[in-house]
Image (cartoon, rainbow, N blue to C red; front, side, top):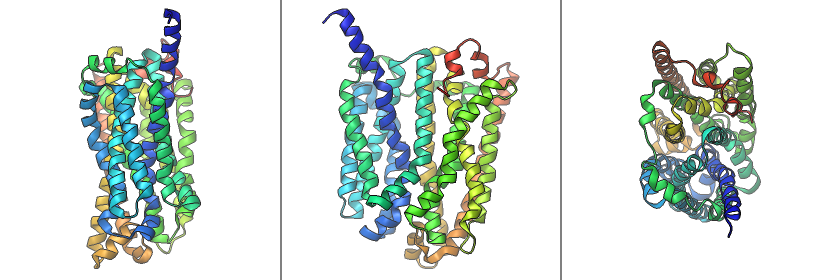
Length: 450
């Protein structure tokens, strides 16, 4: 083969990395946020064993968070391409096991495998994006990744609710399996030199960018956003079932005020930052976090005797609060570090983003279950309520109110910490990273809207 032909082949294999990685990663946030809506249907078919049912959700989220770092060490030895492909294969096996499950424990095992595989997909996939792109192209790839993760989270409950209503709960896991098959097949044409690059790069996740206070302040934004939004996105359908007796299909539709703003807000925020000199990304981040705090408190209107329409306004606030930062976080964070650290920065950012999403969902479930067990005399009924049973609606509403208050307080604390870090950075003479680069790098300036 001539050098020119090899070059063309290399360009083609490199150009396919971004769509393949984005498609595979898209399943992860849907799995984090969309599974809980299927719990009532799963319980009706496979039984409502409390612990086993809860592990349908936590069985994915906890291994996903824990194995991200473990796969990072593995990737250093076997390469990023192999890590990505192996993760897709493990996810495929987990999805198949979930689809075919005849018992809750088998379903739990499938979810555990899917979580382990998902961590490998994210670890290998983000590293592939970093090693096959550079400069503005890398920033654009990671901005797209952040947007895909956000959209996957936001649309997860609606997609899953629709699948449950149309084909049953097994359709949720079958869809993930189909995408995993696609990723396994597509991994064959990923760049062959990705493994050798991986070994040369050293650590799969290098935490040194966190020493940069401005980068740290930006990296904590998706953590705060996850805390204020993702548990509600994941478990509000369960709350609607437990408090209002709503089925999965109707709950999925009611989630639209929570999800549609996520499709609009990123472009709106990007336009404001790049066209209005006085509006900085940090202003957008603060508006978003304020909307999340107010939106969470607004959910206190949920109750057995109250119309669900009262939830629409707080849900819209939450949707905009989550969506506004989506197109800005990645470019702003990567612009805050030297070019030779952009790969490490992207890895840390996505580890914090996806890891925090998985952790807050698991923490929400544990907190809710503990409150329900404390508030309902019958332990079995308490665990059934946690899965969406509507026989203890008042107790569920009371527990839900305590949880959203806690979420609001914690989000406010994180927002305060973020602003303290930002002010410390400014006192040392720093500015807004993206604003400093808008005139010198037009690709970065348009990364979140292209």
